Length: 552
Image 1 (cartoon, rainbow, N blue to C red):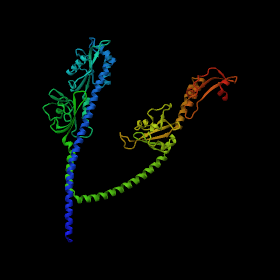
Image 2 (spheres, helix red, strand yellow):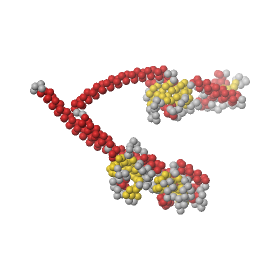
Image 3 (cartoon, helix red, strand yellow):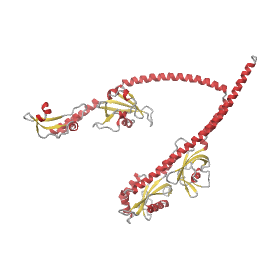
Image 4 (cartoon, rainbow, N blue to C red):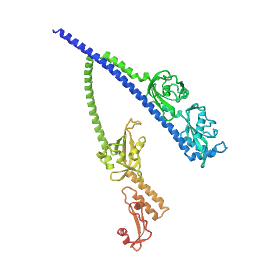
């Protein structure tokens, strides 16, 4: 092979290599696209099933809560007895105390109206002023009177508010030994207050994601919630069971899981169907198929562009460029890390030099930073508290020496949005209670998701002691105008004993003979800590009071 043929052969080999690489690249791209399309379809199905199951569980819990409230009222004599006494009488007007009771029931159980009815179904009172109840309510009342149990009605339209309502009928049993219901009470809840916000909430941004709540009524399927594209259509859209392409009809016919069909707009959708535990409802989470498959289409276009735009030679060049870029990026990272370390070292030096105790914790209250002043104030070395929960290290007490249950960590979380210092007593490792001024801050830019807390503890021992002594002096001066020495002295001893580093005190008067003591007085803390004997009212010989003898 001569010198002219060598370049040609090399070119052919490079062409063959590039073609082979392009074919392999195209085949791999096609396989990757198919695999990714299947994975994305499974992810979409799992996502919709998760939403449907979560919403169904939330809805079932709400329905059960309505039933539990009705059961609690049925078992409440404070609710049943006054209503039963009124319902057996002929007086239609409800007394004012009973009206107040029903308002309290409506507020405490989060219902929109409480309607007492007699056995004939006549309305005795209504918080909203209604004079009658819909057929669903009357049917629920009759069933409750027949069975003696609370009965939940089907969802229906309230003609007064033109919104979906759910009623629970509670039988009212007469007093004494009678078990015969004398009437009932309807707990009326405007279901759209809970159902519409719950069904309209979608966990991630979506242009077409929607939740439907439906139930079957004979040969039709009724939508119970407000639709995303028809927000005023609650309980009005009805679809015949013959429209088998609708996910709502599929649900009414007993299908569950992930299905494909068309929604009420005629748009192809992917949907997940699940039944709601309790009521005869089905919950459907849907998403337009166009949106669900958007990522797959984008990927297909990307693969075609890569097949047309890249070859083996270009891949090699890109690889070399990538290596060069990685090298440059690694150098930049190295310099940035070095500068960061120097900055952190300077900040650490400044932190250790501060005259205030500084403690930093993570979002769970575990200690990250504990400067030298914090070691001095709390008597806890930094190496022993690193990574430990702050609530296990420091105990907080108020000015009366009572322990604060929420602790320093709880105070920090509560005060992270307040300015100024709060005086608290922090118990050191040796058990001393030190008054400090607590100031809390969070890293700049932190929002609801706070991931760190910074606590500054300023020593307020002298300030607190000066203020406390001044308060004691003023208090004793005021008491001295109305109280005698026998009253003032115990109060003085108690006040002095409450000061930090103070001893407990007590005193006795020396008898005129010099050999007896009489009328012992001591502070309130002495019986608690040292001696629980009552105050002596007589005279004692020194032999029976050696402590007094030594003092005398």
